Length: 361
Ligand SMILES: *Cc1c(COP(=O)(O)O)cnc(C)c1O
Image (tube, rainbow, N blue to C red; front, side, top):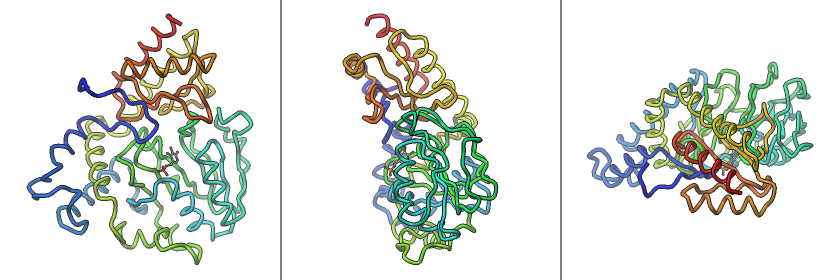
């Protein structure tokens, strides 16, 4: 780590690999002899088209996306998908199932209610979203057009450890905060989407993986820019795509290949999370917010006995170079977001800091 960089535990936008930032920096005024920055070139130029296609191809290979799925590079953030999903999919039966396991799933659920009859297939609100409901707790509507869930609940620090079995009902999944951290059997899903700024690239890019046959049945008033079919037909280039973010995603994917792809990353990220949970579980002062068996490998939520001590921890940690550890207001306490780009060393140093703080206070 360069000495002027902090260990940034922000939930998003979050750390990018140092190698990626350095490479992007070295190419920022003249991308590979083109005489211009990627920020300055036409999205229809040969140079950019190559970046675009290579990035799509890299994503397809790394995330093992089958041929009957399309990879879209959109804008609007993950939140725009909260509307886009029902607008495009609910027309089939007018009904859908939602698992409400956290803030973003709840926002998506409320948005979907504008467009159809939405059932809560499961909710963890009874215990402040500290757990993920088990398969046998899901109340499934066989007539649902799709089943929606959020794989990793960024704010609460819980993560689905299984893929829900919904029979023939297509799965729609918000993977904003754990995409590319573990292998996924894409063929089990109808749509996977993710805002890039947690685990992939700068903010401004939303990656959507969609089974091609699901597009084209949108509600008649679906806005042009929210129609998957428009974006599929024009390969995400109906209008100007988020060019710079796509370029950086390409660099992150190259970096990920060197780390052993998503399987390599799975081992690393699980090791980092386990290290942190072990230190917290073994401490006197701290308790973890999420229940065992539902804990996220990406966002570790924890607290001490008092808000004053939490504040002291956050302030002393920041002074020691560990930033953005304050938890979300819905949960309180602390949250350490340890996405792919957080080096193992950063988690080791944080663990040392936690142990020392636990002894002193
Ligand atoms: C951050 C986040 C969102 C919101 O993403 P935007 O790109 O800001 O719209 C949605 N879902 C999850 C799981 C997130 O972590």
